[in-house]
Length: 204
Image 1 (cartoon, rainbow, N blue to C red):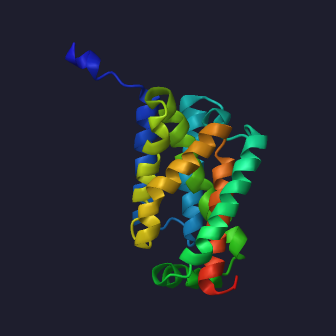
Image 2 (cartoon, rainbow, N blue to C red):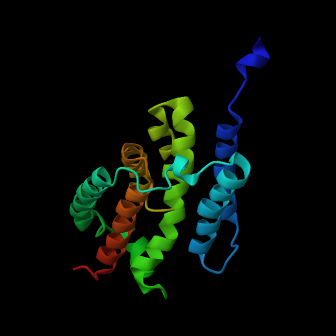
């Protein structure tokens, strides 16, 4: 009886383990010269390989699709507008300015730089993790996926890290509502880009 109580969905266990290992490896190792390439490999390439080769499922099952694009565009517009107002003040604070201003000098154009950095990041949390957890955890999955997302921000400015449990949950809601990780990616991409621009003084 006790062993039966420990019965787990092997796919959910695999997703949790793979996601945790991907975060750990990305933190401790440089695979490529440019860190964003590491995240593309570990946060996008590895989960897609697991979905296709191990689970033998479509990535669409994990949010890799347009989903409800009408709701997605509306939520993206609202999210970007709200974040622009917030970051107009927050990105000028000392910690965020010190951390993000140097990123404006990247060799890669800033919008491309942030896109490369965040595309895999969003798929790991708002695609792979969220849609694997939801069938067994229900709505709690929206908050649960924001926990490792917050932990992954350790080392960044404190205010940003502490806000991630809320922002990550909001991103999770958008992904769940639209059945796609693409719209949280667009909001996160806009947020990251405008933060660097404001922190560096390039956006006034």
